Amino acid sequence: MGDTITEFIKRLLAENEKLERENREIEASNQECENRLQNNEIEGMDKDGIVGSWGQHISDYEIKSRRIRFEEANIQKREKQFERDNLDLIEYVKWISSDLSMLRDRGRIAEKIISDLKRSGEESVDSLMSTLS
Figure 1 (tube, rainbow, N blue to C red):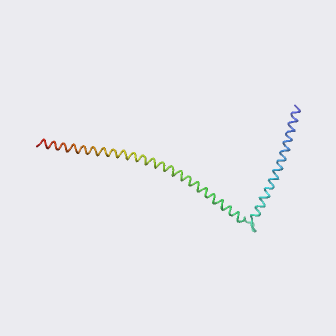
Figure 2: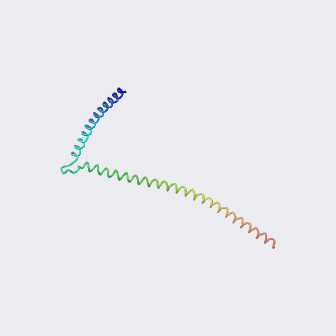
Figure 3: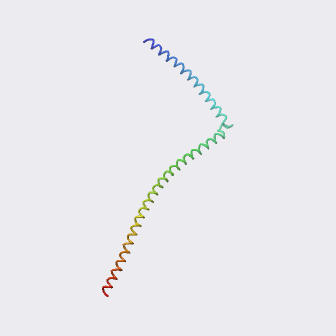
């Protein structure tokens, strides 16, 4: 059992050394990136220490792109509302069309009843006149 613990400790020490090397490499890489960033910032500044024109262009571009994204979101909301309203309108037109068709049929039936009543009224008046004569 003592050998197992010794092997385990040796593996942990080896892994620890490996991690320490990786940490040193990462630190060196981070330092190199920081140096590059500082050099780029210095190159981007003009004599007065104000961010150069490229920084201003990038800032303007970012503001414009945010406005565009905001407007796109608003347009998408309006488009969804328009689609919902359009579907509601289609359903309403279908309902009105069916209701109008039903009313048209009722009107035709009423006209037929009125013409039948006129015809029967004329026939009764004619038969009554012939009876009286």
